[in-house]
Amino acid sequence: MEIKKLDYIDETISVAFNDFLGKCSDYEPYYSNQYNPKFLGYAFFEGDTIISYLGALLINFEKPVTSDLELDEASKNIFEISALTLPEYRNKGCFTKLLGKCISDWQNSSNFIMPLEDEFKDASFVSDYLYSEYLYVLKKEDFVTNQETLSKDSLKIDHYCAFTEDHQHYYLYLSAEDASKSGEALEADENSESSEVYGIEDEDVQILNACFNEEEPAAVINISFEKSYSTIYGVFVDEDKRNLGLGYALLYDCLEEHFSNYDLPLILNVTSTNIPACKLYKKAGFKAASQVNFYAITSPIS
Image 1 (cartoon, helix red, strand yellow):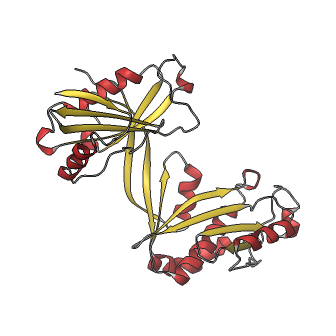
Image 2 (tube, rainbow, N blue to C red; image 1 turned 180 degrees about the vertical axis):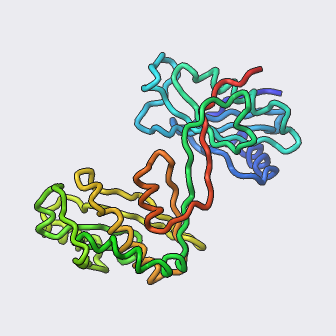
Image 3 (cartoon, rainbow, N blue to C red; image 1 turned 120 degrees about the vertical axis):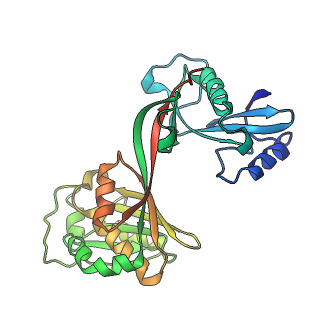
């Protein structure tokens, strides 16, 4: 048996790797078909057969990947580890050997984290619990049932909601008066109704933007569509205008428009460390459908 470091899955091992994946129906670990400086890979070979594989992806993208420098903790690369072993070779130490080799090669410049189920959290290579990642879901019937209650908070801020024709990009703009305040606290009026401008194409959004004398919208939400669900991503509120209810106002408008046109449930991922986002999505009616816990990973004890 032999452990090999893989810069990527090249033509010489692609057949063996695809055969390996075909024998494991669990999930696909991180891998790359071309050179990628943000990727690390190690494979355990028995002859020409891959029996275990470890792939790691750099997740603090602003950092360079280096292995020849002693760096302080704050400057280290952070890699998220994924791994897979053939069923007949599991519980035989293959993964711990791969992990030991990977950490030995990179421990001076990198830290490692990994999502783990509870049954593995006491393993020798597991260090501290770091955070959880939640999958939040909102179904159309749940939104419709609670729509009247949910709408009350969205009406506290006078705003304009614009979205692209394909319903994939939503923008929130303040009124001209509010925009001129440049981040000063907005007076919330519970009796005021939100002003909404719908169906605006991208080029027109720029015109609307200029009319409000704002370089950027105050908040942005993006949606991607799949066959059985839609995913919310890229949610952003201008740093100078946070804690004013703008994120919720745009989110509600987005939900209302989405469920008026589609029956697809909306899903999103959020980490437990992003407390404001967790509160926002719960307030809008999203419920946690699953939870994955991440742990710091150390060199396994032999």
